Structures are given as structure tokens and as C-alpha cells.
Length: 381
Image (tube, rainbow, N blue to C red):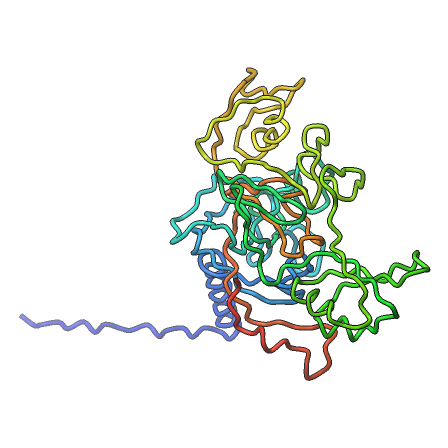
């Protein structure tokens, strides 16, 4: 019997076109960048002076998602590598038709007192809002803020004449912390003098004609150095007196001056909500925590009606917190919109820990000094 041999014919491999190769490369890069941004590190830029002099405007930094644990996505119908809007437009980059339950993957540490933290700005139900708070965007797309964690769940926070106390003990001030001061001089002060002491925010009070007064935001060290100058007569911290609620620019959380006559420099004491802790809903606790219960703690049917909380159709007299909360403040204590003004940061709003600065640009610097070389790859503390 004759043996028949069948020859297998190989099909030639079709070569990808240049357009297809370019598309595949871009797609891979977008997917890889999206995964890295979500799971590990995300780049941020400091847009305001609320953390000066610890962090400067136009510091470029990396934020670790791994430290506190990466959050699972909540808003999944979104253009990759965007936040709230498509680049260079006012077009929303997402639709909120699908909102997934949010979880946090295991991290290797927890938010600690003194950490510099990036979080989604929660906003405050008690005040008008323009910054993308609780009623404007989904949780994971609310505006990113960066502040220093002052208090963790269960801590008692108090500010006395500008000094922070945690659990009745002095909170160590960061070296770069700024406050506002009035400098009385016996002559006009050249702008270069302020620049020498790294004072970028200063203004002369032209309403006063018999004295030369400048209002500056400066670190404690800068103030000590300027006191030695022969033309400086006096430097006074601009600290509000306890119980002064007359200046509406500095109205503070929880916006009830009768029960809480707080201001930016004398605030508290208030206890930060902690998961599993039960409180009685008396008048003071209602004023402090009603926003937590009705807005941030995941209660689908919680309302504040006629001076009481109604949960699932029934009035309640006590409440157990469902998640942890934090108290955040900017190191530029007189130039920061923070927890003193809008309240507590829910745990599900925490994005990550600021770890290091990889670039820093001085927009007013000359060609050779445009980059702040000393800040490159510096650890954030």
C-alpha cells in the first residue's frame, strides 16, 4: 500500500501596519500608566500656598497609594488619565451612571499625626461650596487637597492662640509652618529684604499714615531673624482673641457661634469621629456630627429634621460611626482652607501619602534659577 505524505502549508504572518503598531504602543502606554497611577504612585503639583513653607507653589511631587492602601475605583466610566475634566477643556471626563462600592486594598501603614496627606476635598454641608465638595462630584473625583494630618480618629483637637494641641498635649509645629505677622518698621522696606528671608506674602497697610506697617506670612525662624534688623521696631503675631467671631471671613466649622465660638486661632476642643464609637445626639453633638451622619457615613436615608436625626424613617438619640475621620490643616496656618473651616475628612476620601518632590519651579526665578535645585528629590516631612 502506497504511503501518502501530506505537506503542511504554513500561512505567512501578516505584518502589522505602522498605524496599528503605533496604536498598540499608545494603548499599552495608557493602560500601564493608568495602572501605575491607580495602584502605586500618582504625580501632583502644588497650586496654592496653603502648605508653605513646607511645600511651595509649583512643587511637583509623587504621592504613594501603597502606604495607606489603594482604593478600588468607584467611578469607572471615565476618560483614562483624567480627573474631573478632559484636558484643556471644561468638558466633564466622566459620567456617573455606574458607581461601584469602594474598598481599600491593604496598605503597610495608617495615616499618622503629622503625615502630609492627599485627599479628596469633602466640603461642608453647612457652607456654600465652589471647590468640588460633597454635592458636586463623586467621592473619587472630588478636588484633590494636600494638608498635614493633625488629628487621627478618636483624637481631641484644640487650637489655642494659634498653637495646636492634640489630646491636651502640644503638637510639634513643622519647621516650615507659617503664620501672619504685623511688622512695624521705621522706614519703607525693600522687597528684596523680604525675599532674603523667604517671605513671599507681604503687604503694606497704607491706611495707617503715622506708622509703617507690613503684614507678612512668615516662619518662626524668619521672624526671629528679622527682629535683629535695626529698622524693625516690632513684630506682632496676628492672632485672633478667643471667642472673637465677628469677622465673617474666618467663620469656622460647625458654623454655630452660640455653641462653638471658634475662630482660626482658637478652635475646639472637638473629638474626631472614630469607627465603632457611639455618641449621644445631644445639641452639641448634633451640631458637630450631623454632616457626618447625613452626608459622609454612607447612610442612604438619614436626614436632619426639626433638630434631630431621622434615620430610615425613625428619630435616633445615639449613633455609631461607620468609618474613621481625620482633621487636616495647612502649614500656612493663616492661608489655608482646612478642617477648621469645613470639618472632618472621611477615611474613604484619603488618596495617599505625599512622599517626595521630584521637581520644583520658581515662576519668578531667572533663567538659571528657574529650578529650585535644592528641592529636587527631597523627602516630604
